[in-house]
Length: 318
Image 1 (cartoon, rainbow, N blue to C red):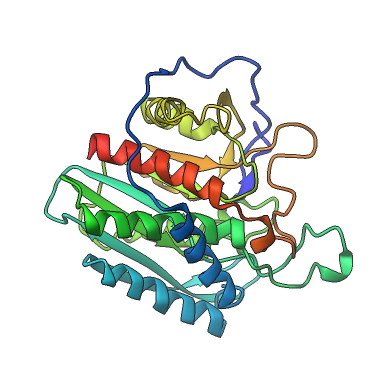
Image 2 (image 1 turned 120 degrees about the vertical axis):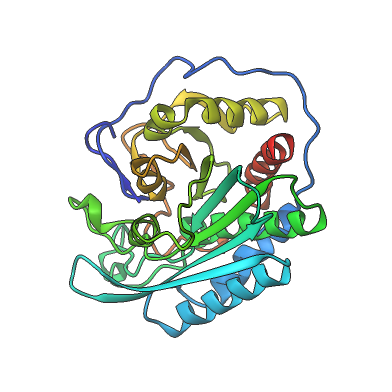
């Protein structure tokens, strides 16, 4: 993903659109929280990290894909694996693997939940130049969103949704370079250009990216706000009703080129729940694309806040 110069993936399109005013009025009525285990989500994140950096074309990457697909099959879902040779900006052919699990595949109305599961091959933002060629663990940038979605799959197995829910874990998001927005989110680009289901068009989509940082705060992402303002309203209202208004800040953040932008360009209303740091040091977690993006920076509390918010929205609408 990348921060946008225009308004602002973890890459981004554009410059900063931070606002001192609320993005929209959100309700404050309390709601009943849907079941979600923060400890289980944390364990899912930790297991990914323990298998090694999930860099395409490595053994750790292949082992992790096998494990993710197996976990989703254990939940009784229809699992679709989409493999592809994707061309990275530097000429590398990436052996990529998107993994999709479907609950109630016969339902026409569908919610798509997605995250990327790969991680950055180089710690190019590390403050120590000697470490910038090392692969990152990607605990927050990749594994956190995947961990939350695997826990959501576990909850949906226990209490299936009334309508359709798809969980999509996309690959090859993080092998990009600054100044080339199309070099990011290659797995999502491939999924949109080659949908594994003919005519696939979910009603809406929620992307989770960097959702495990200690004390993380989430603001309304710019492209999401323009493409799916009602979904943004509903998610931030749900968070406020659950008592998380201090973590889901109801203000505009930045424009972030991330996997959701590929869906938006395909006509799917999509939002990105992504940690955001306003100010000159932003917009991402200080551990982003460094060797410090490890389990020391992951908070079960943050995973629980994001997971409970998404699960509660899901239970009330699907």
